[in-house]
Length: 426
Image (cartoon, rainbow, N blue to C red; front, side, top):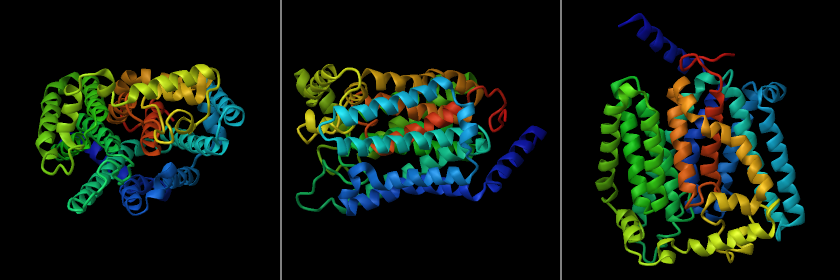
């Protein structure tokens, strides 16, 4: 064994043993939340409203950050001034929309409060990942992948338990979801996280583990029957491959292709409803003869969202209003993140979000060079969910937005980092 390899192993061991209580608690929350969310909502569907278990977990992460050394003054001093100004602008604009435009201001205020919690969680994590919690970034992503695996296991067991239940609602499948397509939130995040971890794995056993995670993520996407998840997963994994070190791309391509192909027969072992599975994906990709059918009714939602935006273009209508004003109390969002943002926040709020998030997304390539061990899995999951959001509600529901916030925090924490992975400038 070389001296460098020995130091690397000792550093890894130190990273595992030196985590403090708040850090371990944060990891525990990330691991437990997806499975707990699936179990609780299976037995109590009302918890799906505002994703209450996930929201509680975000409060827990904020508490861990406060106990783990978060300093507001230091965080504000290190943050981009443009991002802070944009956050303030979004807050003012969204508040005005809630008070002046929203047809149901109480609902708009609750949704805005949830958005605020998600922003605070991401901000706190970014501050600590940039300093004292830098060594926690990759374990955090691994914990997130393991947590999502827990949701997959629980969801599959619940699906098997309901296979012979007469007249079971297979579309509104409640396992941390309110619709079977939302299983793709978990599948897309898992296959992209797994691919990024696989691309940067140092040992053969870890590569085997991350290959399995990637395969299961692809299979869960296939089983969900969702075209958006299917495409988002492929897009996020493809980004991981493009940003991976050149010397690893050939082997990585074989592994990722193997995971993708192996996932297909795995997803066909049990398909409980025609609305699930690869047959559903392929049938809706190639079987519809009109644009309206191909879009699964989304054209109505897109046109309604666009008209609503034009009616209040500056500050939008407020959060959570789409279901009342366009969706006929059935559709929560327009199934397109761009139209969703424009409808609820208008040009001002949407521009503020782009100012906050845009530099992080466009800088993924730089982050992949300076800190590939965290940037590849975080970047892959982020881009996969963003791509999915163009046809689904992955930036409306709390859990996928929480995953996006974590990935953004980790990517932003690599800003200016030129040292090897695991070391920081502070």
